[in-house]
Length: 402
Ligand code: DAS
Image (cartoon, rainbow, N blue to C red; front, side, top):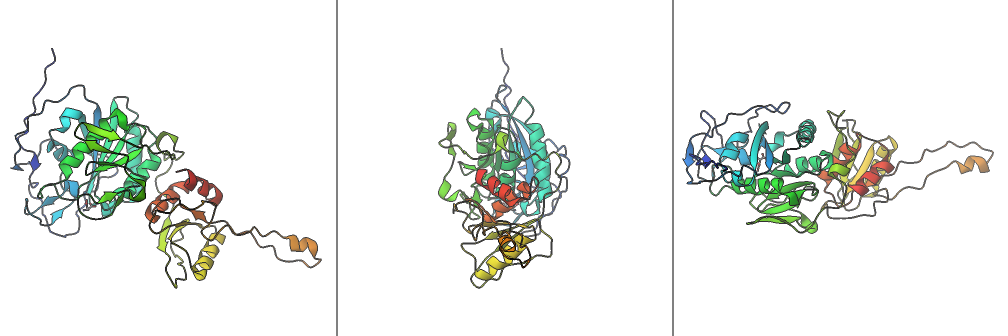
């Protein structure tokens, strides 16, 4: 006979962490530990709202690893239950998961604290460490999937990086909240429950990295933060993969581009990503030059001025890879190799015709066109692509496939 343990959590909503200094609109306080997952304290803090939950954990439920990075989902106010300010990245992974006893019905939860920061402090180096950590974790045969809790400001970028670099067919779900854990009607607990149900679901296999919030399952490739309210994550023209209904995750679509197991990007020998700058074109613009020595530049544009074209053509000539992406991110260009069209290769036919020697002009390397990617996501794909090659034709191939 199987003995089921009834979990009666003393509290569901976690109160202020003792001694935490909470300042409305204050700069986020960093707990720097991105390098190594740190063990976290086990019990939730004293509660401000107790829920009479009685959950029978399912001892056969799939195992899901919740990796916490910070954000509003871990945010605490100085005046709980108000609309007041809060400090993101305060509660621990253990505290966040302990506040949702219902998780035990769907998954056996393990937690890991990767960092505890507002997501504006997440860096590309942290993306690399997080992706490596998830790649290692998903090799475990007993782990069904991973949930990453994250601040919403930079959630779509981290999610897209993981989409490109986690080489597994198991589900990885990135989740955040628009209201702090101590706020009125916090969305973190229901979002976390939906994320865990999705990560635990066999239906979520081979769907790539997903963003699950507000009952929606979005592909990380397409998800964007459109506004700072609940429901603020959307996919524009491309639609959702599915919804988390009362009976669990229901998928209606699956991504078909390259990701996960079919990704060619191996981070084993990568610790830092190549520098890529991002800029916008605008009427009357002359183009931007950089003192940071980037390997690549992404230009958000619906069409460049002649002066901008000349600036970026000159940049390409110096070996910098220039990618153009439509400002809205909704456009699908031909992907044929250049925002201003591939320039005709200049060959030295004149020298053969004439007896007069003329200087040989090297062909201008083509520009690269992003296909249905926002400029911020095009920048991430370019950073990852540049870990493999700086040949713009090969990078166009990558933009065509991912
Ligand atoms: N505090 C912000 C962040 O960490 C916002 C949020 O999480 O919603 O990104």
